Length: 351
Image (cartoon, rainbow, N blue to C red; front, side, top):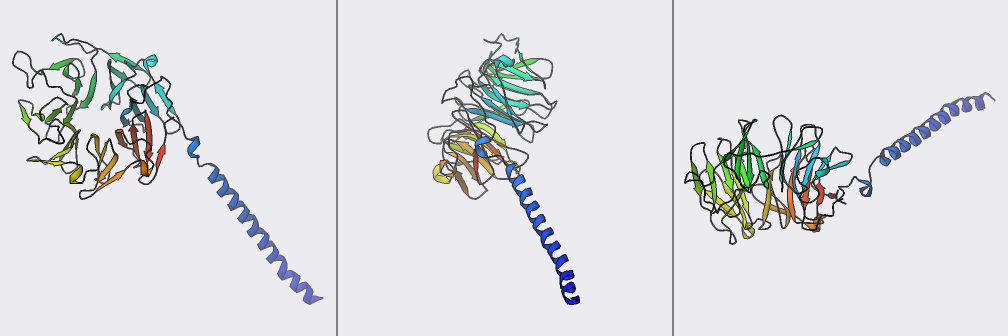
């Protein structure tokens, strides 16, 4: 009898332990199931909705991440989208935007969002958009020109590349930066500025599709740099100065890299993944990324790696690339397409 009681005394804690372990296991499984249920399925991700009937030729043309961490995407037919990580908010002419055709965006040092459109300039002050007219003493053809590019230089001055020429803004007024007026301009009337870049030394670079080469302004004079023809093109857009000080230019034939002395060209047969290049960025690790007619391409200083439809990028006509603070890449494409790339997988956020 005593022996049986002794065995029972041993079994009771064992049974309690087993029961407790089972409860813990069930609790752990339940927690894992709960955590798993919080993972958003791909088909339930927030989507960038097209509400204005934009065409297949429209694209996500520009992107930025503001100081608050919100992502902004400018489209050529659907206005502007703001993504707060949970939902997209669309801004159009109904919200004060000058046009639903957006070419470029910039967040200035004060946190204002500047938007260049097909019908002039708009600013987002944190609450709403409002339009700003570009008044000029030179009586340019339009106060609401197409605005292709906006850049803020190291002094805080804004530079605008428009269909009516280049303007600067000092915080109070716009001043026309002459192209060729009364022989005092720096470029011919047939030339057009579409992109503006400031380098580390404070020089301002200009480029456009009807230029012969690129132009550098040092604050006093302009120097023209002729370029080797790439696949029938000698013009170039100044798009990036990398961490090593190299300046990168693109056109429909390839890219040029300028080291301060000479231009080196890259075309498809030199290893570049494709020829028509629309965007160039540098990531946090120093890799150079190119976007264009062949998807996106990563250059690590030695090798080019291409990512296309084979890798899940459903539309490989790329017009914008943005690396966010988490290291993910946001790819804007034709047909108002938007994709996120984590280095391995593409996820679509377009409708």
